[in-house]
Image (cartoon, rainbow, N blue to C red; front, top):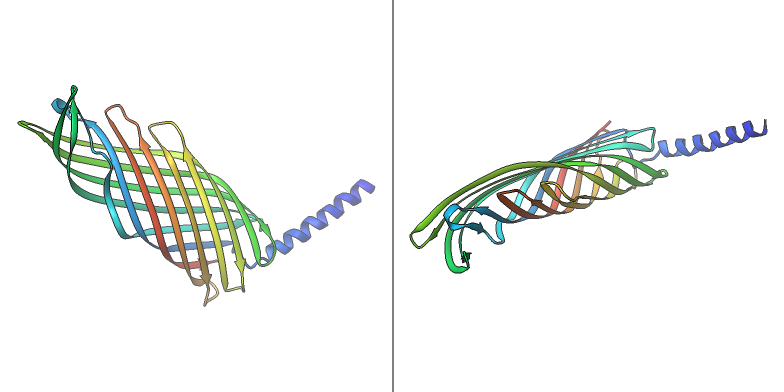
Amino acid sequence: MHATSRWIAAALVAGTATAAHAESRALDPASLWLGGYYTNADLSIRASADAGSLGTVDTGRVHLASGHETLARARLDLVFWESQGLTFDYYSLGRTSSHVLDQPFSYEGTDYDLHSTLTGKFDLAAGSAAWRWWFGGEDDVFGLGLGAVYYQAKLRMAGTATLDDASAEVTKRWSEDAVAPLVTLGYKHAFSENLRVYLDASGVRKNGGVLSGHIYDARVGVEWFPWQAVGIGAEYGVSRIHLKRNGEAYDATMDIDLDGPSLFARFRF
């Protein structure tokens, strides 16, 4: 009987804690975010490829994009058992740019000045899913999440290289994808049923394989619900993305820096 009493007491304590958590104003059973990310995007790339009679051409570090751009972004949060849940996030980025390159070029031990024209088209899509555990009470919750990110990078590089009377045209394209483990941290505070603030951070790192690299993301935001189920979300986010493609005939390294505000239509159920 003594052991049974202890189990009953433990169950009552757990039930009380769960009930308190179920009343948290910082979480919704289901929450949908649809909006845009107005970001200052800085995209640079370095690629090398076989240019036939001219040997291997290395572009050096080239900026494909620098300036503001609006990216579509979608997010879905689900909470189960009042203290656990799933978070899905998705965004994509695409840029095209042309550049004229004049740089030294070495071929069979002799240095030359190479004149080339380079056109690059880059696309990145990233989607993540994370299982999150929430700890806290009525107005404040802290979250820890583990999951995975699927990201796909596409690159097309087309250019002409001229050296004295010799010239070559090079067109290389590839599309690679990878899955990497994801870790997330979060904090939410509810001032009321209709007003909240939050902090979120996540990190992804993948070593080895054809496509490797890391993605780091952090954001701070506010949610306001003038209506029970419909509201507005605004946040400021920073992302740092480094991807490296190791191929037999074509290598590329991409660095992407994103920072700026996002605005969402918020729906909760």
